[in-house]
Amino acid sequence: MKIQCTITLEYKDSKTARTVLMSTKIDDMDFVDAKVHGKHITASITSSSVSSLLHTLDDYLACVTVAETIVE
Image (cartoon, rainbow, N blue to C red):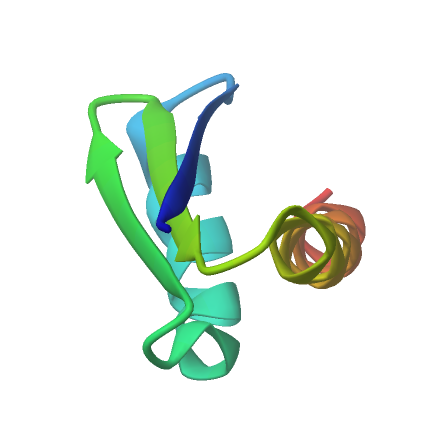
């Protein structure tokens, strides 16, 4: 069974979105497929279980939070 979650993050401009994406991309590996669309980041996470999905989502959002703090 595959479980997928897609989140969209909105920023004040495309430069900020690109900077956050590039700051978190190294940790994404095969777990997160994230792309910039204008001032938005769309991240898709696919997993084989709900608990694994939640763990990956939690890790990804923690990395995004750190990147956002540094960018600001």
